[in-house]
Image (tube, rainbow, N blue to C red; front, top):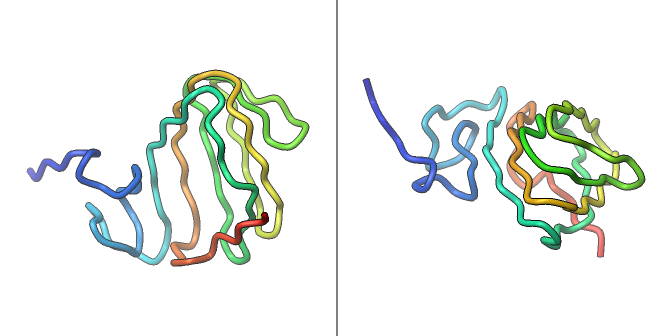
Length: 107
């Protein structure tokens, strides 16, 4: 058995086509993210990646949609997301495929 720590990963990303990673793969990426209430997060989209998110805890808005703990929301390529964290949130993110630099920031 091998043990790693989430703190040793980059921004919560621990599986995917990057280093450090507990499993390096081009098939998908997995991340455990914590966002503080009111945290600013850039409006963005992905060109090739589908993002599947499980909001474990908290309350947030993406665009005009309210999301609550327990919600699973899937974001397809080219869907522009503008998150607003209404409470402290914890999210598990799965992206497929694992494509480096696929995130496009909109100013």
